[in-house]
Image (cartoon, rainbow, N blue to C red; front, side):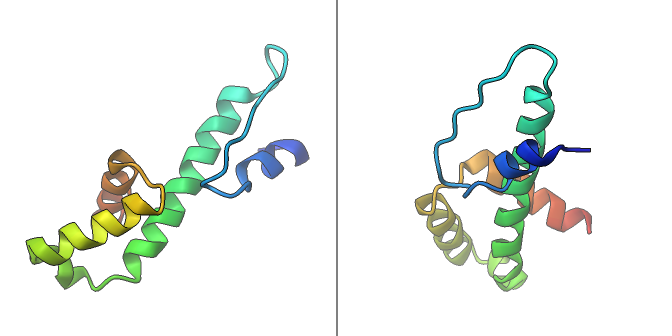
Length: 88
C-alpha cells in the first residue's frame, strides 16, 4: 500500500502541478501509477454523470469530451475512463 506521504501526493488536486523528489527505491513510480489511477477515476466519475446515451450522438459526445479537456483531462485519460465504464 501507500504510506502517508504517498497518499497525500496521490490526493493532490488532479489539475495541480506536483514535484515528486525522492531517492531511488522510495516508491516514486508506484505513487505515480496510483496518481494516474486517481485521475482516471475522477474523469470516470464525471463521465458517469453524463447520460451514456449522449455518447451515441456525436455532437453531444464531442461536447462532453471538449468540456473534460477544458477541465484539464487529456484525451488519453478520457478514453481510459470510457473504456473503464464500458467494462463495468
